[in-house]
Image (cartoon, rainbow, N blue to C red):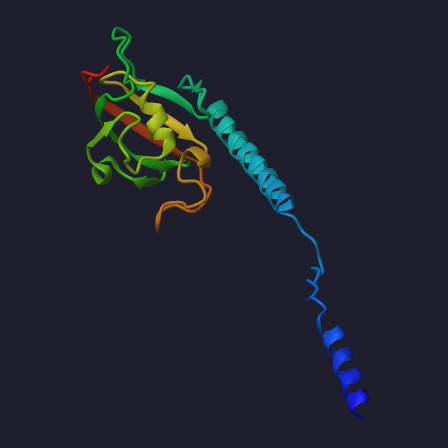
Length: 184
């Protein structure tokens, strides 16, 4: 009987020493499919917004629109043809702006936004990238209206309780002053 229990003990030790095996997933997926789908959705969204903006530009025969290298369009309400000074890195600028839907419906008025002090490319202000890029195209005293696709405006997040997600906008900016810093 001792031999039987000894043999049983040895066999249980032998079979219990097996290491656990990892379970394989039922379905294998990679993150690249999600990224590809997201990129395709964004390309489609940008194409739709650009088509909408292009149609607005085509219908507006009163203004001469300029396409920026940054992916938005603009026209001058008031242009300074004499000055050559434009804001550059580190300059302190004072400006006012509004935000409207492309239909013209006001989202933020100039009274709501007030006068803005901004150090070009240095201030961590809550300005949309379109406004930060647009200011660098202006001269002191100019007023410019910009048409921004949603990725240059409020994008996926929108503007709380005022503007939905992925909505292109227009903004009229008046650059009041440019104060160059000593570093420039």
